[in-house]
Length: 264
Image 1: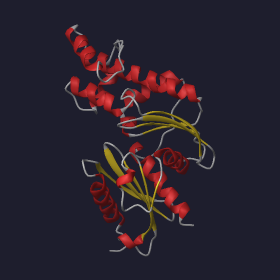
Image 2 (image 1 turned 180 degrees about the vertical axis):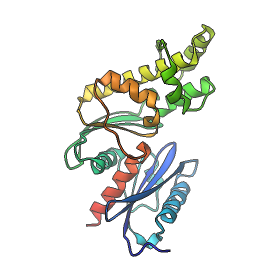
Image 3 (image 1 turned 45 degrees about the horizontal axis):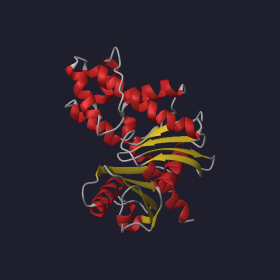
Image 4 (image 1 turned 120 degrees about the vertical axis):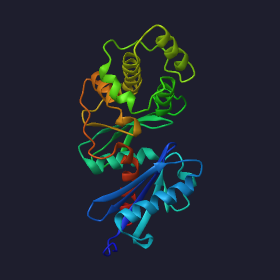
């Protein structure tokens, strides 16, 4: 089976934790693939691209252009163009809905809030890439300390009855604070709920500093944490627009959209 002469535009988002590929067709449908980034960013990207091509029943020559983005974009030798993930997240969100005006993206190593216009152009942003607080790395530390999977940070959140007060958002000190809470007899559910609320407070403050917009989406792997989404919605006092796709794919989708634009 072949691709039937279809043309594809590829976006590769090489993140610190996972690498994502989106193959965008001319009719705006797309296929995707994702896997852990690992130590060799370039090699992983080529493997994920190959997986996406298989899913699309396409060949390498069917790809018109490849745009790379993300933490490891400098290692993407297969990309024709590389751009920052800020622009790609704006384009990805705009592709999903032109009404979206704000993106909150929480990745493994950084977090960012982006304002965009009706055409998907980034108009302003605020970013935290100097500290692990407010990133996926922080939540990974919490899960490891509690000896649970990251998925449990979502599920167990709603079982919390009295969320614990989390005083430290520093990845260096949060482990000892959680150990102290456990020793005090606090339940894992109350600890996780407290962590999600503290995390939402930090991210929400970033969003408020930039300026809240009504049409807002949450992207990145951390967006799969339903407990965090619930806490963030409460803190922002506004609902988050459903993304409709895997939230980890937004940056790669935006890169694919840019690849299509650059080909015209």
